[in-house]
Length: 275
Figure (cartoon, rainbow, N blue to C red):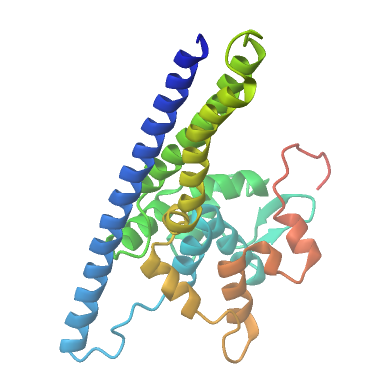
């Protein structure tokens, strides 16, 4: 019966990780309820004041953050500056400043990320802009409005899901070890495998439920923010520049029709010599 301690270890890992995930999901649900209540309070307050814009209307930067996080905001800013001819994005992966005066905090963050030389790698600019204070301020405003998931809540949920995956892998490893070292005269392999199948069913079932119930909380947008994103037209009336930038905000650079611009924004990990 040497395999019993291995089975108990598998049960302990499965139970602890699943309880941790349930607690994280409960906390996320409470935060969602609080965010929805805050959003509804603001809606009612604005309605009582007769404000026609009582529903929060997402800006392009807000939509980009809710759809793809800080890196989507950086991509949108680069595309906007390139199309306005304030920045040149070359297909080789280099960006050159054309107009050193940014029109908002995010554009100024891009110019600062490029540096005094006026030219830098696009991938480096994107990463630096995504970490800039202007993006953090945007995130804080969306979290305060109940439209974005706080970093802490998203990290706790992601960590809990990883723990359940780790418990699943540990259960499989312990089961394999028990079956390989099982003496012929002891319990039949099928009997031992059945016992190890129970914690495996628990962890896999927990992961299956988490995929449905917890997946919305691991995105950048809260459920309230996701509702506003779904209501955002990906092709605004009249088309033109607004339509292009809205598509980039919601869908990312894959929404661009220009292959050269998509190549310019590709995340290159190695520096090329040519410009």
